[in-house]
Image (cartoon, rainbow over all chains, first blue to last red; front, top):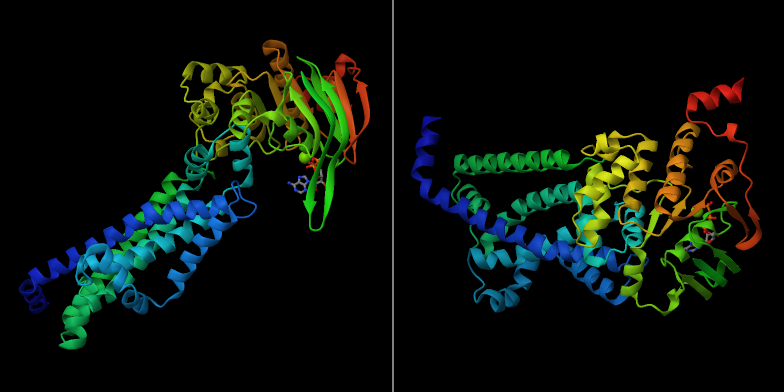
Length: 225
Length: 243
Ligand SMILES: Nc1ncnc2c1ncn2[C@@H]1O[C@H](COP(=O)(O)OP(=O)(O)OP(=O)(O)O)[C@@H](O)[C@H]1O
Ligand SMILES: [Mg+2]
């Protein structure tokens, strides 16, 4: 045990940097989920055939984006996206560059999840908003999101956890991060103690994220007794 | 004044269409309490949705306060809609908002903050003591009273009620109907009341229309029941009925 602690102390700098790198990738992914994924999911909901503001062409286009991003195997997606990444951030290597494909996936995932969450809002809520003369932004901000908020938090939690997993392979484009650290030492130099410590760290992180998400969702859900 | 003239409404269904309302003409006067009865599928809800401009007629005209709704832009329609209150069978309260916030929501849509009006309306429906609760903590009758307060908070000239008592037991029904009669007497609101419960219409309305297959089957003055049939409490009603 003390031997392990000594080794962890020895690698302290590298470990901290890898945690920081994972943090950056996660933060960028979540930002993309909220700033791009949620609006896309909301538009998918509103513009669907039979929805409050049917726009078939827009709906098809957004649906295509979500389906394409979600269907390409992630490693392949990372490589295929390299030209886009280079155009967006000027390089295809490093933590920032690694954030780009992660952001695309996070946005697509959360778009689908938030669409599904909004579909669970009772049709009566929409009917109420319309009868009160709500415009589209009011429908979203004063009726749909307040009623869907616990589902939106839970699905954001799921996306976050998926991104922890996706981010582990970002080593292929020099993204670094905890997963990359574990793979480098565990797979390439057979230092299993370091690898298992990192895996444990990720398990604990996932449990904390899930716990926080579940608790928040429960606290803000006032719909049932 | 609400005037429907030769209104037909059909919904496309596959290759054909369902006719929900068929050449219906009807005038409802100011401050009237007007009942609409009819079997399921006879077009009652569609009629209310036309008056509230949630649906446009396939042909014919709907005029509210002398204004032809067909001539208005979507934005103007939204504004007109705010002058008409609506009460639903399932109350349609927001489960994540408190009683106070539910009632305040129509004002918020108009960027108005009038806590006193909200409070007044809650007092009017006798729910002022529950303003910090959430709907799930209330009984069905209490929820419907909150929904009535919400519909009235913008002081609409017209109140449309779609089966407001159908999800309630008979004692609570009397309570809610007493409030609706108060609304008419105190605020001079025109009330259009859809219900399949004939006693409810009989006890409160001045006139009633009977719909059948989307057509106006009858239009009649309502004779109020002898006063003893109006009960103030469920216990009194139950005792009278059973004895
Ligand atoms: N949006 C719609 N799309 C297709 N058909 C509709 C739509 N709204 C109503 N209809 C049809 O129009 C007819 C009248 O419906 P409406 O809801 O007005 O009846 P109702 O008298 O309110 O019935 P209930 O007592 O069951 O509420 C029905 O046959 C219904 O299926
Ligand atoms: Mg109906």
